[in-house]
Image 1: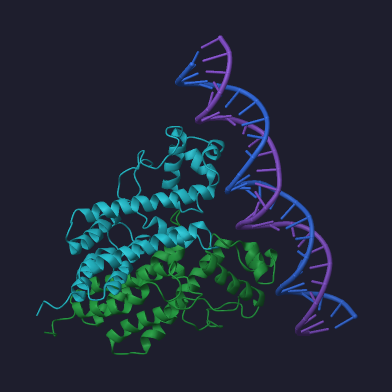
Image 2 (image 1 turned 180 degrees about the horizontal axis):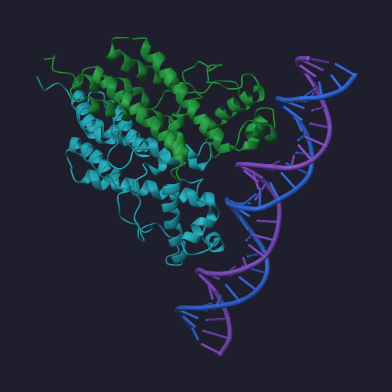
Length: 215
Length: 215
DNA sequence: CAACGATGTTACCGATCGGTAACTTGTTGG
DNA sequence: CCAACAAGTTACCGATCGGTAACATCGTTG
């Protein structure tokens, strides 16, 4: 119950491709970071302490603070990586259907459902963080807000590409279905929740926003 | 910045109608409880301590523990009241259109949007709690799960009443839109978020699930 | 007035939290 | 072989947390 990957993220590790980090001086750091990501996703940010992270990574608190300036810095890095992984998943999912915007949208919801069937899935990491980070206008809040706005913009673009009459309206509806799937997945187990109805709703909504051709 | 009501709940206080409580031995208790509900909703459950609740209510921790067995007991009562208020809001909203299931559904989303425009709205109290309560299979988790399942069942029933061919599928789609609205409201300010597109999507989905009549 | 119950006040407890200092171990490489 | 550095270890700090004990105050009621 430890080495399985995060639920909501696509896949590929960012091995080495992350800007100009001092190279391989960070074996322990990487171990701690991966452990922290798993624990944050599973038990929430408030629910995991620095001691627990270091211990679960087979290290200790002092080694943790040699690699991270503070817990907040770690959390910010966690959120940023979640977003990077999310967009990687999004891009590879969409790339399977170039020049077919409608299939791209459907593929996104198909892939979301597939991930939701994993028992390690606990919805959207960034969105869950939004429910925890309530206080001030700090960096964490801005991170989550910017992410959600990017999702919205992308859906608007895809709705426009599919030829919707009111692209923003269709994109917003798609976002409600997407986030509704993530949100309900927190409560409904495995593949039995309302998220199973998302793809059918997506198809209906796209059809309704297309210029008349049926009939 | 204190006496305004909760954002997501309809209205009416449960003045006196709550089973066989020892009557009026609880002036302080009520004050503390109301304060706790506001703070829990605004800052999350983990983000509010017993000291802060008692102080904000003009009392102190010792008086708190004379009225509540523990913080967990208070949280459970908070969640139960949120659900009671939610169903009261739901019932009064729906009751305005008896014998018209379609208008009932639309009215729910209209009322949700109206509440979402309030600046005190932070989405669904029970749902937000689900993102915080991650650990065990305790009472809080069961409370939230039971609530969400009741919402789903009600939407299934309403979809059946409206005459949908696949009522469960339509009800699930409605639930995705509903919870998507709550979830996105955590991040998007006031009435500018994707939730504004919910009602139009609801109408499209209902139409699509009705036995053919257009054309 | 006396007595009682409800409330406020202060001090405290043990646990946990984020964060730091000082020292030791172990590996690597010139 | 020895210097250098990464990592583990232990102990500690102040703050905060949920929760409790003991005592002071106040208002009501008989």
